[in-house]
Amino acid sequence: MKTTNFIFITFLSFTIYFLMMHSSASAQQSNFQIAPSPIAYPYFEDGRFDGRFDLTFINISMDNFNLTGGDMGGRVRSAFSDYLAIDGTFGAMFLGGSMKPGLAPISFYSSSWYTVPGDKASLSFLAMRGSINLELQPIHTSDFDIILFGGPQFMISNFAITSKYRMIRYSDGYVSPYEYEDKLTIVSTMSGVQAGIQLDINLGSDMRVSPFFMMTSSSGSATMTDDPQLEGYDPVSYDVDIPSTTSMSYGMDILFGDISIGTVLQQMKKTEETTQDTSIIMISVSFLFSDGAKNSTGETGTGTAADESKIE
Image (tube, rainbow, N blue to C red; front, side, top):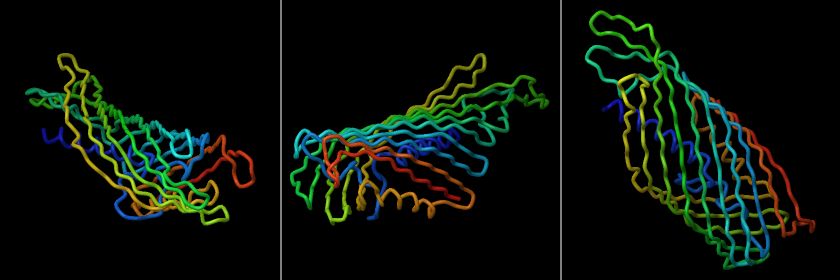
């Protein structure tokens, strides 16, 4: 049972880590810093529609462990008036890779045989996330704005580890000539609510600062299923409730036109959180679009932005 708990906690933590890493806000932030704000743009106007679509390539390499894949996400906001709007965020991530060594089946018990895992296991990770906010803008001027927002949010993930293994007889060390395959799957679901406030201060010359504060509460459940795919052994499942947790994020974004300084600094900050044994490469491309609002030249505009971060 200790092995079961260790595997469960390790990979459940991994799942939550990646979902939080790509959530629409810095949900686990614990001190003030320059970071992307939770609202797509710091103000809205009657009839304005804002949108953003992101594509990210991800490569993570550690000792005996690697994952490669991508993440895509977007956020949209539609304003019903100068005082009321609704926004939605969505995203999906897929990663695939391998680790060394593999895992032996945790659901196999025999007085005559024991199992030995293969040299390598394959990994796959699929996650989806989303949120909806109702936005209230009680103050909207050319120099200063306040937005209050809140709504539900959710995260769903599926983590699968597939390992080859062989069976060895206790009595004489005989190794079975057959190679079997074990599949360990962890499915987690988390949901809750989020609420916060964001300010917009226009400093002129296309520069704005946006202080923000957000509180998120989440809870859920997870199921780990181990299938040794061996005759006479059925899959074994373990269920656990994920207790409710509340996190707060606060900070400030700085914008020059459509460029978010908080996003750039967030990528740079990751360099301080890695070791020489870890390499993370993330390449992101964003497409921004707006309808129904004028930019500084008097035209409705769209744009693209790209950023790259390599951590070694």
